[in-house]
Image 1 (cartoon, helix red, strand yellow):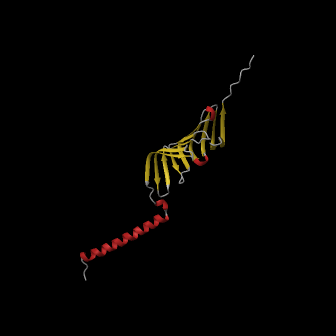
Image 2 (tube, helix red, strand yellow):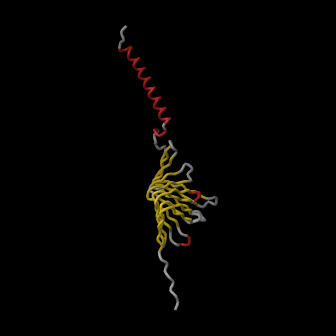
Length: 195
C-alpha cells in the first residue's frame, strides 16, 4: 500500500497540532511555577492626577499628586512619576515631600519616594522651614512618619546636619539621626549690655 500526499497531509497536520499542544501546555506550566517569567504590563495609567484626603469636619489633611501613575496587576504595584505628597493636619505643621519617582503601597497608606527627594516642613511661629534632602524616603502617612536608611542632609535656619539614616515624626517634631551624624550651628548674636 502506497502513501499518497493526500493521505499523508492530514496525518502530518494532526501530529503537528499534537506537538504544538504539548509545547503550549509545558510553557504554561513553567510560567505558573515561575511567576517571574510572567509579563509585567500595566493594566491602567493616569496622567496628572491628585488624590485628596479629608477629615470628619471636611478639612483637607493630605494630598498625593503625580505627573503619572501606572498600575501593574501581576504584583499589584503602583508606580508614581514626579510624586508630591502634602500633609496639612490641623495640629501639625504643613509637610510637603517631592521626588523624581515613587511607589504606592497596596493599602495606599505608605509612599516610597526615590531620587532627588526633598521634604519641606513649615516651622511653627514663622521661624523658617526645615528642608531634608535624600535619595530615598519611606512616608507612612497615617502616622506622619518619614524615614530613610540612606544619606540625608537636614537644613534649618541657623543649623544643618548630615547623617546616614533618619526618622522624623511630623506630629511631634522629633528627628532621630542614626549614624555618622555631623552638624553645624550658627552662633547666636550676643545682646549688647546697656551702659
